[in-house]
Length: 211
Image (cartoon, rainbow, N blue to C red; front, top):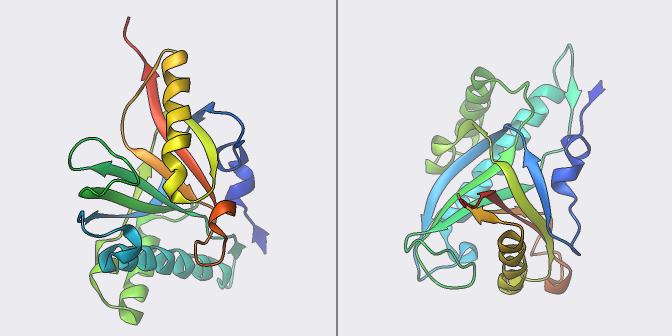
């Protein structure tokens, strides 16, 4: 059986240092993804729709994994990648600890050999097992962020603004301008990891500031 490990293949994107902010060039990558909104009175952990969307993402990712692992010919085994989130705020200024109407896209990277047809077959399987609006709204799409800054945030989500401030200072010092959506990659399970030990990659697309 062939083995594939996207975490190793893209180690420079998924194992950044917590001690420094670095510039990375993120190539086009394929994701299962789903969009949603969280009202200001709820956090992500309190939003039933957000939780359903995350569940649907893991559902499609594991359905795809076992479809390839159990093939009679040319079977492939690979680990399911980490949950990721693209975040923005309806007010236009995103802050991960301030209540606002948050706009999100949650996503999990998929291997390139997952074609749209295979994805739809897997989605149909998932809908038969767990019918609902989450699986119905799933899609397969390429994301090309290009040049970004990123770093590892260690600690609870509530202290992310400190790390984001370091990223903002780095961008300003090096003549970069942030654009696009704030990107988080969740490497720790908040239900199993002490808050002070949680690891979250923070990433943001950049461009050179105009003269």
